[in-house]
Amino acid sequence: MEMGPYANWIEINLDAIEHNVRYLLTSTRQPLMAVVKADAYGHGSVEVGKAALHAGASWLAVARYGEARVLRNAGITSPLLVLGMVTPSEVDEAIANHVTLNMYSFETAEMYSQRGKAAGKPVLVHQKINTGMNRLGVLPEEAVALARRANELGGIHIDGMFSHYANATTPGDPFTPLQTKRFKQAVDLMTQANLLPKWIHLCNSAGSYYEPDGYFNLVRSGSAVVGLAFRDNEPFPAVMRQSFVWKALLSACKLVTKGEGIGYGQTYILEKDGYIGTLPVGYGDGYRRKMGNHVLIDGKRVPVVGSECMDQMMILMPKAYPVGTEVVLIGTQGNESIFVEDICKTWKTIEVDATTNINFRVPRVYVRDQVSR
Ligand SMILES: Cc1ncc(COP(=O)(O)O)c(C=O)c1O
Image (tube, rainbow, N blue to C red):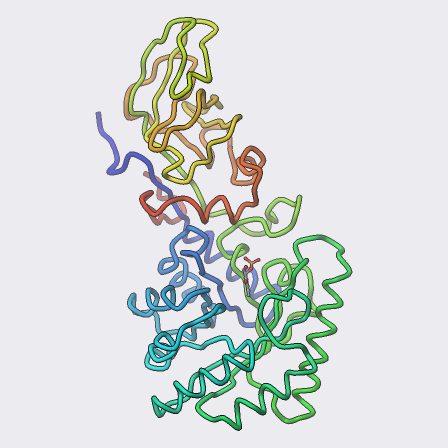
């Protein structure tokens, strides 16, 4: 039997990702910062980053310096913002590698200044404004003081200012326009003080799709770029495309007799003789150990039975299938589909959590339209 190279793998459609980037560029008419943190939500930061830049994104963003290092080592030279905390030695590396950092407090300004002066080259920063997320950033009324302090200290170049929506995922939440208003206040104060930096950004994916008042001159998007839903209880918009498919090969097939139990704890007992298939996928891959999972085989939706093991799980099939038969865990087969949205109902989580936590040991394969394995 002919089989592909992997027992279980993910296919990411880069044409879908490029489509989403172009869609956002056209709909917002603003430059785009593609957020590729956490390995682009499990899709692969280097490949997604390259595709996003190819489709016209101007910036990339990550959460940790180590993620920026991965992109630079892969030859990505675009502007690149680290959204989270960095250590002094990482600041030194950021200066050398032209990576922009988040100046989110007076303490970070002090530390960046020290490192910038020691390097003889300024640290590039975007200044963070806390408009209500209460995670990182200074209050709008402190924006000018922070910028002045950084300029006074030296060794820092303020290239942007930004904030982050807390509730844009909830349709109609009044906190979102309030955050826009607070951010505008900070922008106005910086303008009056003649300190307004080049890049001004507030919107995440939901903001980029629904909040034109929050556009300023750059939008940041992660989930919309890779094709994952960004609104509570709303499917991913049909104008954009999902890019994520997860497949596996059937590793064993056997007829198991009535009354036999399946797997650890024997949590599933066969009510009649049945064909049990084994899949080389388990919770060690990031497939969640939850009741009610289904997969697709031969274009049919079949249940996962028993509790998922670390590396394997069992399915109940209507008939025997050859070892090596392709099984879809997330995606479409024939007329049936299990989208990330559907699996999240069983896993009781959000789409970005589901894909981000699929383990590194599952190979990511990059495909284009019309190309399927
Ligand atoms: C500061 C910041 N900006 C942008 C994003 C991207 O959000 P989304 O995936 O909704 O576009 C995130 C993600 O959590 C974030 O923390």
